Image 1 (cartoon, rainbow, N blue to C red):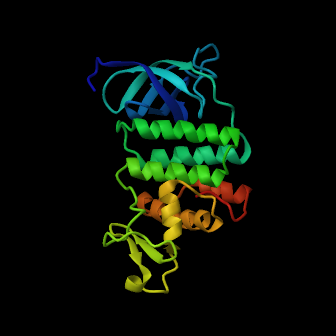
Image 2: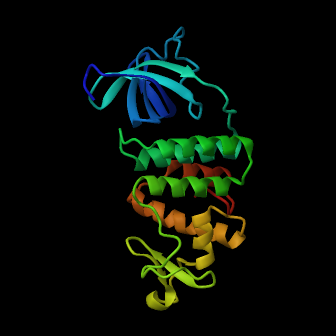
Image 3: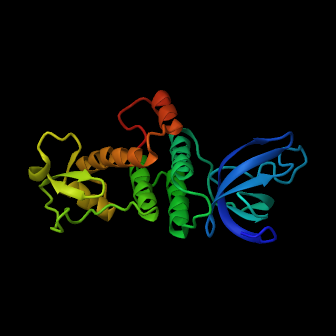
Length: 246
């Protein structure tokens, strides 16, 4: 992006912010057409700033910015409304989504479909229309697909259709390997039904929900390269129970 280029009225969400100098903020936004962008919000912490109360996480915004280099300058942000405030476990789930984007998505890599999936996940968390674990699984699958790490969930590593009652070890770079080819003692095996349900986004079967959680946790940890997710740690400490994040 050239130093003189300006982006106006770009739909986006604040992923993270922290103080910068005495009166400003650094914010990371997830925009629809420009991906993750770092912005300097000059004077945003001043008592009379028009940005106070606007740069909230999980709220849809229209954002203007300008400049070149890695960090741009925020020009304006307008709250679009329509998104209920999150609280409790739903709020921590949303922080988990933000952390995944911040850790896995490079800056200025546009993913409009993922931006839409993120907004849908926030609305679902606010409305509690689906179990939180289901919302997280669907977003994780969309995230990996958009970043080029999509899972093959309907055929095995040799191109054969998955058998619902079969058991498979999902191996990164290979896909679903039948256990007779990999060994019966692998703790990460899942049923073909679990993988097929994941492909359909159908997590009504408790075995599929539990199996998909274990598989996605392993895959995401691999792509994180050993980074520790703070949202998962906090969630586990506050709500230590079997349905913890991811």
